[in-house]
Image (spheres, rainbow, N blue to C red):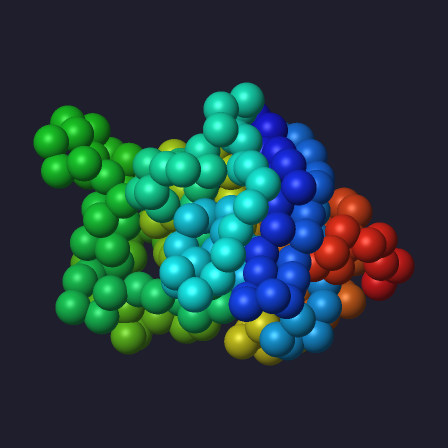
Length: 212
C-alpha cells in the first residue's frame, strides 16, 4: 500500500496554502508539522476529498497506484482520525464500531468483539461512550476507523487533547496498529514530540523538511 501526493496544491483565492509532493509507503508515517492555521488540515482535506468549494485543489492523490483525486470521500478508502473522538453518543461502544461495517456482513459481531479485544476493551461493547476515559474513547475511535478497512490513514492531531502520559500510550497504540496493517500514514501536528514519536520524515505544508 502506497499513498502518493503528486504536486497536490491547495489554494484559497490567489494564495497557495499547501503544496505537497510525497510518497508514503505502507508502514511509514509522514508528519506535516506547522503552527495552527498554517494549512495542515486543509492539506488533509484535499487528500481525503472533503475541502469546501471555496478552496482550489490541483495535482493528484494516488492510492495503490490508482488515481482517487476525483472520487468522493466515501470511495477513497482513506481513513481519518480527528483530535476529537467523534463517537456517536446515541450508540453503544459496539454500535459505534458496527457503524464501520456493512449490516449484512455475517461476521459483524465477531469482528467487533475481535476489535475490542485487540484494543484491550473486551466486554466494553454495551458501554455508553460517555462512561469511557479519554484513552478508551481514542482506542474505540481508532478501531472504528480500522474496521472500515482503509488503505491509508490520516491523523489530524488525534493526541492533542490527551494528557502527557496517556498521549504517549495512545500514540504508540495508533502507530503500532497502523504499521502492523501496513498502512501509509500522514500525521498532522504542531507538537515536536508527536513528530519524533512518528519516526518518519517531517515536512511543512509546502514540503520543506523540518528537524523537530
